[in-house]
Length: 56
Image 1 (cartoon, one colour):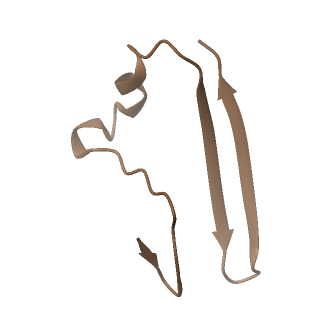
Image 2 (spheres, rainbow, N blue to C red):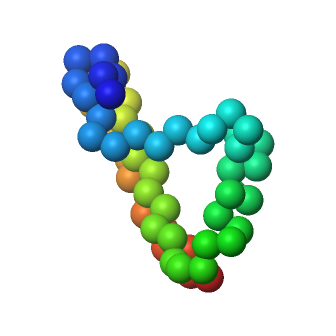
């Protein structure tokens, strides 16, 4: 997926019907979930990354 001058390797976009209730889509999932959030500020060329494990 193109993102300006570069590209994104993985993009997960919730379906429109899950926008408000996105977490409920995983209620039936019984395994652990790895949550990863990455943002990039093109003005100061810095990125932030948060990784959390959701243990069920």
